Length: 623
Image 1 (tube, rainbow, N blue to C red):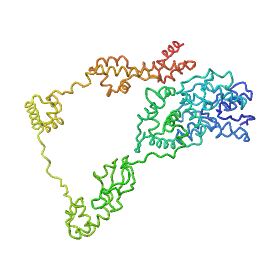
Image 2 (image 1 turned 60 degrees about the horizontal axis):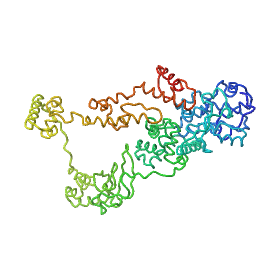
Image 3 (image 1 turned 90 degrees about the horizontal axis):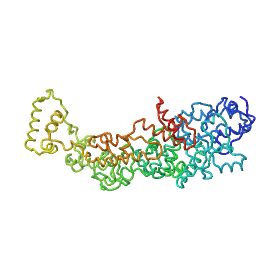
């Protein structure tokens, strides 16, 4: 391939697309497709964040320029932001694709739209433009400004501005950062939200600078485990309190801030559970950064302050522990200093060994210190002191039964020990009575006679106690109740007193349920962000109603049932509410509206294109 006679060196934090823009301008090439053919051997360019086939560029750059593929990937692409959040095999595949080429690179971890989740146009910082002109004589597109969620410049703490250059159009042309590519004025944010946005941008900038040299998600997952244990959100058994963690994150950031990142969808932070549930599926770096700052005050602190250890795991209380040997002079005294806690299928267990008598026993499960002095234990060794005492008494022809009573153990244990030591003869062994199956089959009772007997007993009990309740009747003749429940349940139901639970207890609370459901529906409709579907489950969760499908559709709650029927969403109604929302969002960003863009922003599945007419109508009505 032909060597480049000229190729510009990247500026600090310059994204690769910006470098290629300067190459296009410097060479005076009139058409973008000609430059793309020269660079990529294709009339189209590559995507902004993860361009593939970079080796085809660097192998044509003179070695004296010292521009390598690794350097361009590290300093001019978004791969450093992904490395800590993908497993090693996925990262290796991504790196190989970026180096040697793979047109399906965005499908490697199924995130074809990952980096366009927040920004649809190139962004810039006005003060960065001024600084770049003073230092380098020209402005350029910064990598950090194009990262999802970066609304504040981490260098100047100013709001970034959306240009008029669409990300979807980059592969068709080259648009350097010139006055004609600049967009509207910088937006303004509330002070509290602006401070959080700046913190997030600083975290993203730190990760862009150091992510390339970090380890993959296997190490990140270990750090999550450490941080969650330290903060008390994960037990030593590996169970994570995801609901409490999500609520604390909402309190920390606020709903308004999380909604800007689509991180408070449908009234919950569903992404939290997916990150902490110990699986290797990819999650957007944006969510990881939010969780890391909450756990460690910054992403840098999350990855660098790893010397802090989680609280010590003490399922059996703190040391020392008591000796449970009745013969030991330290019986029930705390003399066992050290134990080793292990786990079997999530259950902790440990062996306690007394240094004064050699007595050893096992305990499993979580047993607090105050419960260590009693309860069942599993003895693994009686110890040398017990063995010497038993040997001495048996040699003195003491009764094994008397020894067993004094030593609080089974007589078989004493006799077995005496036989093993040669003190007792083997004929003293007490064997268990073997089970001898009977050759005669058990006599079966006549079913009809038995049923008649129990039916008569049941009816006689009711006749003798006319005002008896079902529970009282069961106490009067529990055996008849049990047999009839197992063998004659239908007859028993028909011939029992009327149950007080025949009518549900919640049937008299129609007004109370109506108010709960009305408030829940109002909350769902007024929650910012993408519309949430109004269904039995969502209403039940917000209103705190168990078994919502049964109760909210019950004839015992006619007022509530009618309200739910009027407000619950069908799939089509929910899709249309999301379409209206998506049109408002895209219109607010000043974008050209198309059916595809609206459908994608609304995240609706409509393979038969039934909603296209409604989308066109919504676009027309919004003008």
